[in-house]
Length: 310
Image (tube, rainbow, N blue to C red):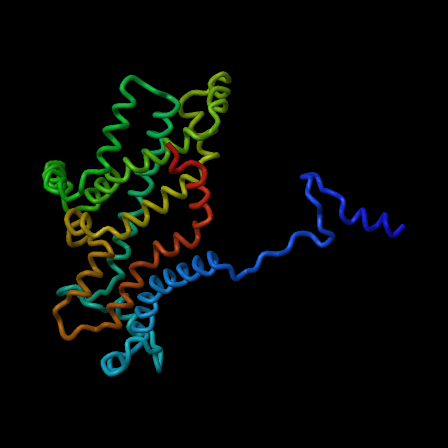
């Protein structure tokens, strides 16, 4: 009986090796490659989080504490007065209305620009994959080539074009510009994503008599949530953080939040209020950060599902 138990404990497994009664020996956690990897990741995290730490702590300090204290120290008496002033009372030249007007201007610019560019690009990508026409590859090549042209090269022609259209200095001008410049890269993303979907779905819908728009709305869109989230994050981040187009095309009354932030930081009235500047900077970047935190998992899904596949 003892010999039988001893023999069964050393029977070969399916791979032909002798199985240990206790399983494989666990690997040590503190291996050299793992220590190196986590050390690099820790240093990278600290490198990116340290400026944010300085911004938050500085925004919560009064000016005397900033002048005579250490920039790295925590606030002795935290206060949100600088945040309130940055939102409602900071001066942007001759006007002292804070960031709030710029925030609502950015909302008015971002929402229609994001919706228009994503809808047009999704239809473009869908058509380029499933409804090929003569010259479609040339059209796609020209469209992608346009995304590599520096914006500064096109500023003067676009100023002349919007002036001829009688929309220069208005919300319509900045919305049109953001929509145009967002389409090339978004078209590439949607084209690659739709190309990764099973072609049999499209053919089955055609056999059932579905047309262009019915296939788009009833077959393609329900399967495309991840790539729409990718496009949403890219466009919101790019449009909200834009400064160049905002300062050139929007006009003084429609300055977005980034232009207002620049005016606050570079205001020549009195001594610089670093706590207000830091609070205004954080407020300006909150919207893209919130979008990233809320949509992060779907963003990863969209990239993994074909957003960068050719």
